[in-house]
Image 1 (cartoon, rainbow, N blue to C red):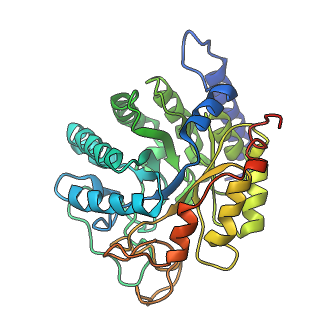
Image 2 (image 1 turned 120 degrees about the vertical axis):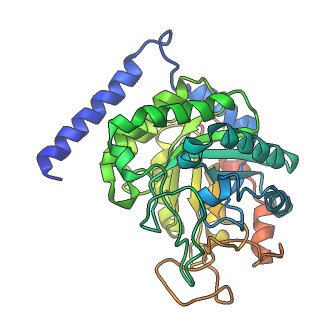
Length: 369
């Protein structure tokens, strides 16, 4: 993309965002006030979450399509999550599954919410995702087996990059967003709506931003009682990041950095004066593990979701970018062996005991001590 075209895109995006917020309250639902955001956050308490994919699913297609939806595994694993101290799961949904079976997907989402609520776990649904580890198209049907020794090797985006940038495809995307959000708009089992995972990943860059802006509009029109958010995952403070944060009821972000980097990113987002959610974080690397990162979140009143619950077909226990390793090698992510036993019991104790530090609990909200 040339410098001129980048400038044109920035101007266009700014105009879209300005138009979104220029509309009167009587015409379109508006972003939550900071007071409303903090009232919600104070009511739900510290959120200790995990990005969840059933161990029996290689990707979100296998998770949500009728033939391979696995409520027995989900029920067992969310029971384990509760015992570990988690009170939330973040879950990706598939537009492609909805496209071929809209009512069926809504029914399965409702069943999933019922199972989660039975284990006292709130759900964060994520509607779109640009991540494409598989470098493949999302196709409903029998999914390929995991790639031996490869981290998350079958993960596909939703929707395809072509649909992200082709406005002719957007009416179907809008229908999907509003069907899902509309179905559960008043459902207290939905804790947060994370509308778009890592927009711009997979080489799309700023090309995803116009769809992000529209997705916020589509979702907000359904007037959900849970907050809307999308998290910048890189380039914190760039045009895309600023625009996304400006659209969000509560501020979310991703950070897999060492402790100093996580603290720096957290302080950057504190300037917005809204509750903070770190929706992807923590790696088993020196300075990036639970013992290093959780005290930062406690200090600055940040809720969080690590990646991976049970070691399974997604193989996220394997490290990024390395091949030939197995489940017997040191784990990158994931918390539990397939039988539910903790990989690192000390980490489970840190999760169970996590709470916001009282001396700093009000620093983020701007309240006076």
